[in-house]
Amino acid sequence: MRAAVIVALLATACTTHKPIEYARELSNGDEVVAENHVGQTQEARVVKSPTSLELHSQIGVLPAQQVARITETSHGKGALQGAGLGFLIGAGIGAVVGYSDGDDHCDDDGGWCIFTFTAKEKAVLGGVVLGGTGAIVGLIVGAMVGSKTIYEDGTTTVTPIGPQGSTAGITVQF
Image (cartoon, rainbow, N blue to C red; front, side, top):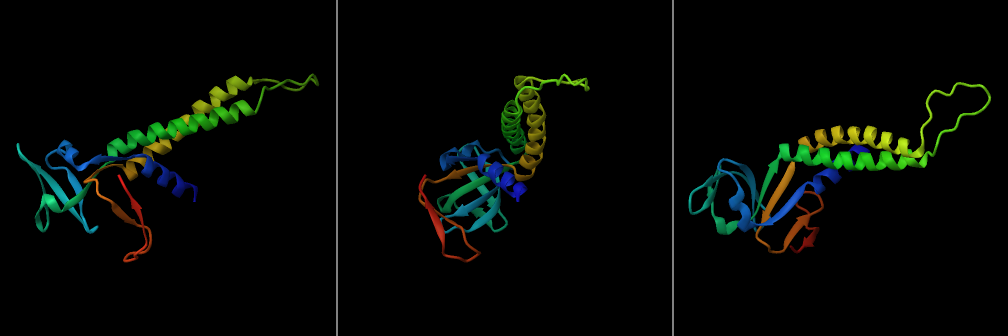
């Protein structure tokens, strides 16, 4: 359950929305998913010319006026963003937990007292350890999920939340 929450948080955190006019940023040969105004998707490859951008799919060239959304997924960028987010989350939690544990004190009963840390030292140590762990987990999850850049035409879209074919949805205006 925790892993699913982490994946969901990183997936939403690593999504960028841009107007469809910015799709010219895409490189020649990029693999994307194109969606029409009714929500049907088609995998396509970007073919750029000096004056236009075309999306070539298995069914042919997709007409630009019918494309409402183009989604590009980058696993390398997702890995970097995931590592950064994982580090920040882990370091923050480690610092809070370390500091909240307070200072160590040695008892005068003659027992062993090798390591004693102040609350600040524990915060730094906790931040480094959990930050590093978070960066590694974020790197792996981010590479698997990828970073999505969504180029949209700016119209209202309906995002289905139910089973396939369900009419339930959420209306989102960008």
